[in-house]
Amino acid sequence: MPRPQFFPRLDDSSRRSSVSRVVSHGLSQNAQDTVRGQNAFIPDFARRSALILPRRTSFADQGLFDRLPVELHVEIFSHCLSPFPTLSVKEAPLLIALVCKAWKELVYNTPRFWSSFEIEIRGSPSGTSVEDLRLSRLMKIWLQRSGSRYALSVRVVHDPLGRVDDVRSAPLLLELIKHARRWRHVEFVVPSASLAVLQNTLPEDFPILRSLTLQMKGLWNSTAGLDIRTTGIPWAQLTALDLQVESHILTLDECLELLTKAVNLTSCTLNAECVLSSPAPDRQSLRLPRLTSLHLILQGGMSALAEEPEASLTSFLNYFTGMELESFHVEWLVRSRSWSGAHPAFVSFLHGLSPSLRSLNFAYLPLDEAELMECLAQLPYLTEMDLRFSLGDRVNDPITDGLLQYYTLPSSNTPLSPSSLPSFNPSLSLTSLLSLDKKKKQPRVDSPVLEPPLIFPALERLYLQCNGESCTNAALLALIQSRWNPNARRDISLAKSLKYVRFVSMKPADWDVQIQVKQWKEEGLDIMIDSLHIR
Image 1 (cartoon, rainbow, N blue to C red):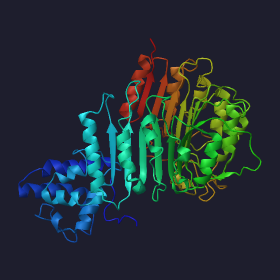
Image 2: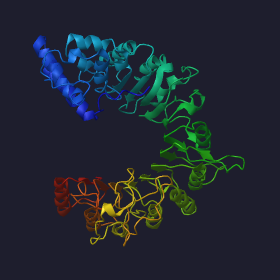
Image 3: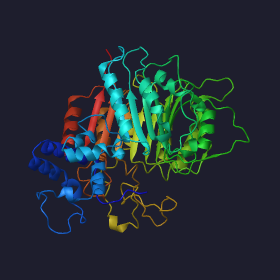
Image 4: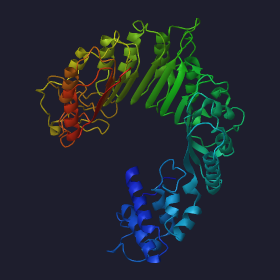
């Protein structure tokens, strides 16, 4: 059942500021002060609603909030909750319960408020600490208050320190497994040894599970691990999947088998052994029509029975058909640079993504300058570009002056009037430059011809990481200057829409660069040019 739209949902910062006012005004035993604290909470949520204000009424009137139905109280308070609240009195729902006795009673007796939470384990593994026991006790209280009817959204984060196996998160996972049939959105970012407790303790079915994140943190090559293939996960139910495990890593063949079942995915992140057996003639293509985000983390890749890693990747990607990806991310953690043979197939795959792709992330792909530029040429509608290459590789660095100059906009480009263009597509950043057919997501035949053509006219976010030996500060600054205009937010006809820039290299930023960066920051550009020094 959809959420009743009594009040507009605010962003996280607005919710937090509202709750802060509740506590600052409401933590008092005095009845008048309590009402004042309640009324301080109301404006961000209720003031906008004609249902609550059928006539002109001052929010300072005594008992105004108390006159609302309990259902509206619950609805208002629910807007204060983050997707995964922490177990802290500094955050809702515990924060709201501190305001007054009535609110405390309402919060404690509403299971919905306790059906989502996040636990983060910190510190070093020096036995079971008082803090670990406190977290365990609090989690059990939250689970008890959530009842047995509401679906659970749970995040457990445990990033261990040092090189010693740390399984302090394992008891928490064991407690959560008792409620596994209520899991809806689950994120376990924990050491591999802790994930091992899931192997033989999960139930046979997960009737309402919709999103699953399993990420291994900490020490690799641990003795224990989780084999995701034998856990009975209902892949067909999932809309979001993030598997980054260390033990029993899936090969690309096994990824295909898994994805064939996960037909409803909209977002998918997988780390995989870059090994694909020779394409089988009877293997069908892979259709994931709802998939908008694909993130592949590829490693290993050495097998006498499989293709070269680069060929395995492109063969794997060629199984996908009918996708309209908006975000594509590839991390290449394979010790192989035999890219040239697989490059044409990879370019062909990118070309098929051209109409819909808006965000691209390459990490350590073994591309040279020409190959990188050919890849980017297939994707003219990008709004976000993240290109990361080895900081220590001077010879094969594809980020060169030639590349930076090629993507520098001409200083004489003229702004176009939006009124001269035939349509508006909200998925594009610059309506004055990109006019797409709404059904086919292809350029309209009647779109105006731009002379000269602008490369990446909608680019808003740029992240570059490289060695820096092959590019100069002058070329980098010219690229940024050509794509930055402080008036871009007020004038959508301008192509200079860059809002976020990060550049990381081994080359120190000189004084002129620092002065220019400071000026851009004052103008409103979110920018950082950083260097890594190795002593």
